[in-house]
Length: 358
Image (cartoon, rainbow, N blue to C red; front, top):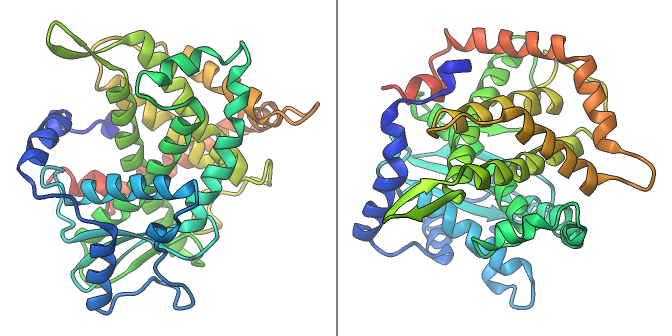
């Protein structure tokens, strides 16, 4: 989306307004309150064979805190009144499905984000075992960097990948806010013909929304207080952006099952390699558009790849290097397809890029 991916200047004020709004807002909803509310309205998880996952019952599970913090973060975001779109009432919940997925749907007047408990567990199992690798001298500096926010490098990567899911699904809800009727966004649906074109537009657009929000989260991480005001530390931003991009790089490499055949206009979702390509562009564009200095984008990306290589290397096999070669070898066809999707979005009204301008 190039320059079109940068939102209006008013969006730069959202985070500042949010803190003021939070002071006036009532206490946060509890997970039990949300589940009881949805149950009372006859709303259940999408798959009738699943139930609402209740992390509050997991007393001995290390995942309990992660689920709780993710819910609080997501529900607080959905309850904000200053985001420039209306998806109220918005609710987030976990289903007992153990696969790696999430979905967005509108049921009656409710805008719902359903996160499969398997998605959060997958991220925990994927990122957290890599914690010890950061003790190596190559990556050790990231321990000190992330300690600024009282987290570890692996946990930061888990957090960023998690909010990618949240903001992507919210993007679908924004799309739904411009349409009549109840509908669903779901990765396992099958698409044929023109539905593929529509689905690819909606997926790219939801990823664009997520990339903007992730860029703002990275920027906020890099803010430090100087003379009573918050400013972006350019060196901290460069390093934390590299770590964040590495988290996304690793996620999409894993989603390709290491290196499956590329496809273009064939399935409901664009190929993970295509999505990774434009996600990197969108995140970098939105970072550059919201800081007052020139980013060294090549250094940020190269460091992200180096981090990914170190964390994903298996014995003598460099998975990231193999994947990067595939990406480079197909860069022209991937770029051409991304531009074709973007061109299609110009005439399709039910997208974040159009609705957020209203």
